[in-house]
Image: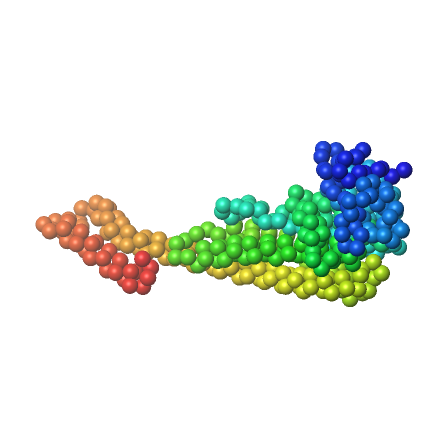
Amino acid sequence: MAPRYRQGVSVEPIVRRRGSSVVDWAFYREGKRQVEPDLLSDAISRARAGDGFVWIGLYEPGAAELGRVAAEFGLHPLAVEDALHAHQRPKLEHFDDSLFVVLKTVSYVDHDELTATSEIIETGEVMVFLGDCFVVTVRHGAHGSLTALRERLEKDPEGLLAHGPSAALWGIADQVVDDYMAVAELVEDDIDEIEASVFARTRTRDTGRIYQLKREVMELRRAISPLGGPMRTLVERPHRLIHPEAREYFRDVEDHLKRVVDQVLGFDELLGSILQASTAQLTLAQNEDMRRISAWVAIIAVPTMIAGIYGMNFVYMPELQQRYGYPVVLAVIATACLFLYRGFKRNGWL
């Protein structure tokens, strides 16, 4: 027998607390959230009778709780198994009387300064089971809450929820893609910061930061790129569970998704160019350091050579008997060093 949830107070409370993964549920009729019935089992019966649909939201449910929901709506075991475990790729699967959609959620992690070990992209998943009379959402990850989205759809003046469960799927997809765009803008700010640092006058070591950001961009690309296929399918292939008017809304989501995918691909190429520029600048700086060191070695070699000659202490060295030999040798050393210094300075070695 299916568990009996009450809207408000029940045997198993709807408001999520320890031991319960149910975030919220509601019965919708003609696009409006209904106060009655207050039992989930009664709401499901009315939905199956064609009077509306039920939307149940779960957060990281256990096998037992999701199993009860799956038994109530006849969800496919393979899809239920995927919904229990995170780290799924975005996809769209068709079953006899339902659709199963996986969407990757992303979140930007605020940080004071990007380092070689910073993690700025966190990912999660939202799994959506869609049927004639129900929507079941399963969320994994600390971000990507659907509460605000549900409230926004319920207050929508156009009454999008009147299009049935597919309107809820559109709202979830739209929010997920909007989050992609927001995260992409913040990542772009990080890229601009690193680019300015690489081409600054002061020497900085940005290679590790660039490589880490490149890895984060790759993580973002892996999260959003695979969603293009499912969105294209929802737009181009009519399906009895997708309201014809809702397909136009999915087309808008697909357009936004294409834009952000292109943007992220551009990030990857730009970071590759910045990494090459940083490496080239590092190599150039090393060459300049080597030239500077070589110039000073050449200057120091002059007094070292002369001191080495006079340090041999032979008896018959003609300069040893000269009264002004010592100051003359010092003057020769200073003149030779000054000549070399000016030459290296003129050529940019010092």
